[in-house]
Length: 393
Image (cartoon, rainbow, N blue to C red; front, side):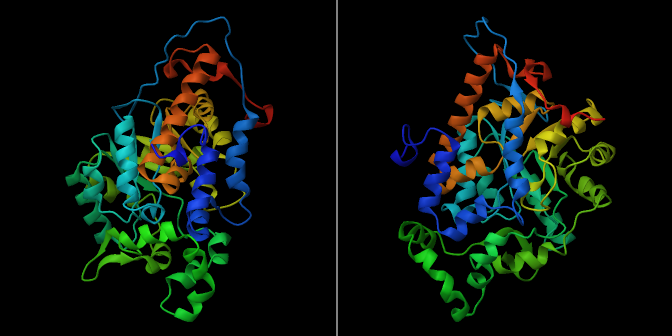
């Protein structure tokens, strides 16, 4: 493992964040790190975990802790799934393949974003563990159907349909960093923003060696080929997913569907009604609509509303293994983490992702032992104290 991400230099996810910030250009780091508008929801997702405290059972011997969990009928070594993170190839060469390879080595699932710079077939070749394909309807229905068929043929086991992105959120850091200008063909408009790339020569050399600005290899427009990076924002606004779309998506896929972006009990019940096998309580990591409640606060209400009719997962704010424990106590079967491993990817590629997973696994084991709980399967709300203001009136 590279010294840059090894202990004692890196002991937690925040340390990986600092290493990634040193290596990456500001525009790429802020793409990972930033949120929408005032970033209140981004911060609240993390702070919500601070509001939940533990109630340990002491004087209990737990020489070993069982972290295994079954999600969509497939066994994972721990209740963690690497969430879909778009444009991972900007963070490190062949970034999606590197992340999938780290997930494979750790025995956990990896979810590939539609907005990937690597072909889904190449990502599938990097892992023998469960792979999920996250679907946007960018490029239209025919384009989505083509991607679905490719994902089926490549062996992806679940389709993640994101429902909270009718338009891109207002990510002010991207505007200040000149994303639009850097993607334009106008050299003069690029000029004020190019310096942030030039002062990171290590990243720049790897970026150019990897082919430079990527295309979206899994959004293949008939007659035009893979979608250009500059075209994605406009295309996203024409690709809203509605509940009625789930019918043809399910017919085309024929396997397990995961609905990502659930934030209310009503939407959770609709996910059950359309036949989804799992849902993700998610606010897109605070990158879409700002000033919505943190996902951990919504989780108990959503889990209660669907009982055992669907598997409930949580996304947002995971930075420590203790966060995973709290989510499981409040009703999640497993969690998805995006930024936590993206910082590792930006810091050192696959080795950084492996280090992020290793940190979360060690945290998880230590937390279970300190709680006096021998297995993630035995976690429930009796192990935590929840603020009264979270309780339904």
